[in-house]
Length: 324
DNA sequence: ACAAGAAATAGAACTACCTC
DNA sequence: GAGGTAGTTCTATTTCTTGT
Image (cartoon, rainbow, N blue to C red; front, side, top):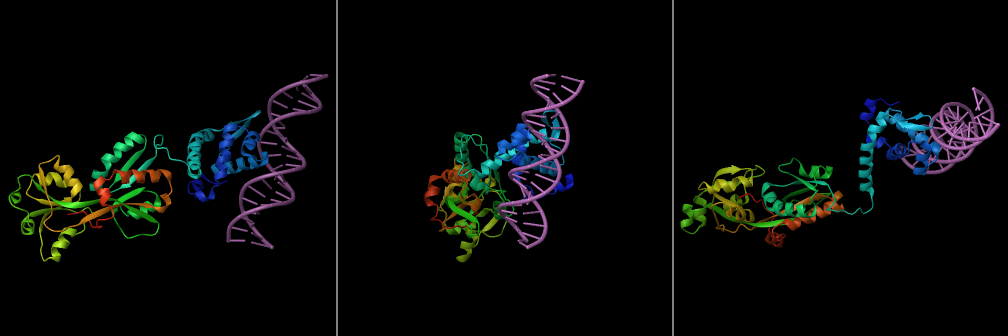
């Protein structure tokens, strides 16, 4: 008989799933013969299955008590978890099992930078609350090795900059945006037009989610032989608006986020004094989830949550870091 | 109380199928 | 082809029910 230690170390591949189905029937019928009829097997075959289950689990599971079979405490403890597990397995293998958002209690996970979360989550959660009140969403930021986690199924979706195609991964543009310059209301630089010279003369705030040096703005300035002074680098977009509102720092920011915060804080927006173009964020997932009805439903919901202007521009703008 | 029959479990032997 | 696994049929054993 297998020891409990070896059972714990056992690979799932060594377990016949049909044994668990047999256990379900045995526990439901409390009779080997009736369980056999339920399973469509002969009584001896079901008795053998019970024998294998006894060896596998190290417990008699069902013991004869007169004219009936009594479940052992171990078997009784297994009944609930076994039903849950088999229900989940049946849902996995059910052909074209429809996804019902109104009744689903599925939990999804999403990796994104806080800028995209701030733009997408309010409309997304509004629709979730209305259409799928029991569905839950976990948003993570700065996850290590996102593609590997998507492949493992540890992560459902990731929103980030468009990246080169990789085997097994799918992506679609979800949000495009333009840059604007954000300054506090009453900033001295606002007294005259914000020329390139005046822009470069300011002290700047740079958001760098990755922590890597450089940015699209600094690269473009360098191409024209110019440079700016970055006085503050922060890792989160949401840190920037109040810092800009209470200082003379200039932040070259994603337009949709800047507009949202300009409605809440004393901020003024100006177009950049040089052509910055825009950037595109894409939704990324593993091909394993491509035809999963629930996953497809969430992807459509996320895409539909992008601001209308961003969706129209999606696919046109260049894929460059939003950090500015 | 005892014997016979019915019903259920489980072992033995054999077969079919799959993998290496 | 060998070995392993899980199915089958057949049969032994156990336990309960029923009739005498």
